[in-house]
Image (cartoon, rainbow, N blue to C red; front, side, top):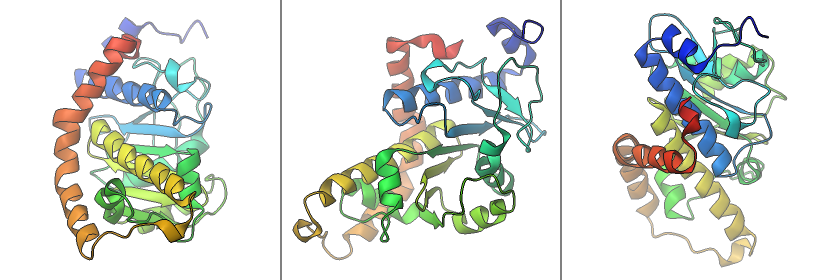
Length: 258
């Protein structure tokens, strides 16, 4: 452990400024997932592509809680989930199965988030999936793909089916499992997940009163909202929401930058 453990300065000096910036953003995303109560002990993953020609990615140390993760503690791995830099931390190669499939198939998939929240799993267990019953759901719904459950994602052969089901969309409900989003930046990926998780949470709360009392949006409105969501989420994420979230974390605990 002592021979591979590096200080923040050691890690920072060993990577490019571009990689360090991605590390800070990804560490922030982990902290925000914990802050919003979306974490699942040490399970699930958020990943980001390392800038450069190599197929390298950043992912969480398997033995840390999400609120403990920092920029320097993130593990750099190859497409098979094996570390490519010395690290004192454990890695879960099987947990990268879903992420590696999407990163390798989609050049625009710079970041991938996968969660197991209660509301996300509940919607994933419903036959109809995400329903257009709230503005949040309507903004994200047309970007959502579906993938049927095949068991714990350790089978590398499942990667091809995951990619095929996702297609060109940026969000996915993994049936009976959880939620997933893809982004050209960590900020875009997080904001898409925020909308997807909020939509799932609202749906479960609305359905708790019974489906008979639901108000259907006027004809054509869900499609209109879907177009508005597709056009605006990326800009809102990168220029407005993500910088605001980073400022929030800096006020609460800036150690994610270490």
